[in-house]
Structure formats: structure tokens, C-alpha cells
Length: 234
Image 1 (cartoon, rainbow, N blue to C red):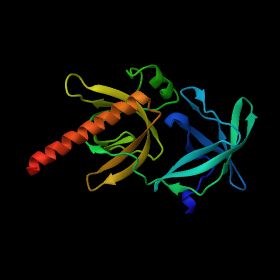
Image 2 (cartoon, helix red, strand yellow):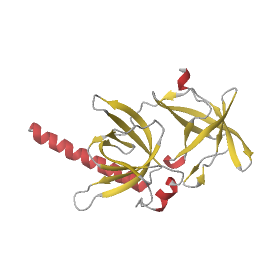
Image 3 (cartoon, rainbow, N blue to C red):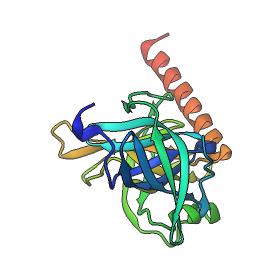
Image 4 (cartoon, one colour):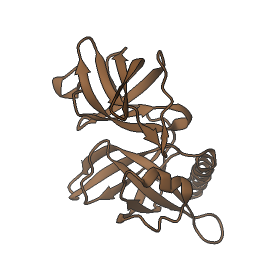
């Protein structure tokens, strides 16, 4: 493992929990023999359920990509009013290069919004996003049930979180927007355009939203294949 790709003190990391939830926390201390101290994180105001001997996945980010390592919870301690957990590194980090779902190339309107400590709770309470700051409006290049990508002149750092609103157009009527939390999984210069290709990975999607995106992707794929056959004369 290259030195600048190892976990270090102060890293902001994600812990993979239950129900497709990603819990954001920070490496507070590093001890010998693969031990790391983290503050017990929360999602939507609820602490991550951690117990001694739990196996979890820790995700951290570098300019070269997204890295994953398996951890084991070995103990807890309390400092003041803050509860911390000690994690033991069970495996070497590996670079996440998997494409977990089919992506369909399609242009959809996206509102990219600021992420704050209150953002996750707001998503659970409302889909209207009346009190959030919209950073930019862009169009997607593709979408899948696991994420979405777009081109932008803005700079995004790997591991940053965003709140996004995506406008999906059904066969008839008004667009059916959905709100999602996402992590920046990729940000690279796009050819000579002066823009960056940014890939966001969804996390914490409800079952209804997952089904909505999956249904839309399958339908869009079906339409594109049908158009291709017509053009090719099949």
C-alpha cells in the first residue's frame, strides 16, 4: 500500500452500516497494531448501532480513488459526553473499482445542494428542500440505482457529501423528483473541456426510492434499445 493511501489521523471516513446507510465520522486517534479510534457516528440523529465484535466496513478517500477496509469493533470509551469506539483493522485496504449496477446514459435535471450537519434529518422530514442552499444546477450524464454522474466546472473532493434533487420524467405529467444523500466517489478532468466529471454514490436510500430509480433505469434502457433497433433496421 502506497504511503499516501493508508488511513491517517484526522481522516474523514464513512462506516458502512445496516440498510445501505453510510455513517460519517473521523479518525480521532491511531494506536499501534492496527487500532483506530473513531467517534460513534449518527445518521438522521440516531447513533450507529455498534457492539463489541461487530464487523464493519470503513471507507476512506484519496485523489486516486475510494478505498475500503474491513474493521472489527474491539471496545468503547467515553471522553466527557462523547462516546468513542476502537476499531481493529482486519484486512489491507483495497481500491473500490466495482460497478455495482447498470448505468443508463441520460440527461436529467439535478439540483446539487449543500450538505450540513442537519441535512440528513431534513431528508427524513421533507422532500421540498426549502431551507437548503442550492450550489448548482446541472444535467446528468448517466444514472443507476447506486449513483449518478454529471459534468461541472466546480471542484469536488472525493468523500465530500452532497444533498441532491433529481428530476425524473415519467411517460406523462409532471416530473417525479426524488431527494437523495450522496458521496463524491469520483472527480476527474473531462478531456479538454475545462470541466470535471463527477460521480456521486447514493447512500441511505429508502426502499421506495431504490425501486423508483431501478424502475426508471430499466424503462429508459428498454426505450434506448428499441430506438437502436429502429435505427439499425432490425
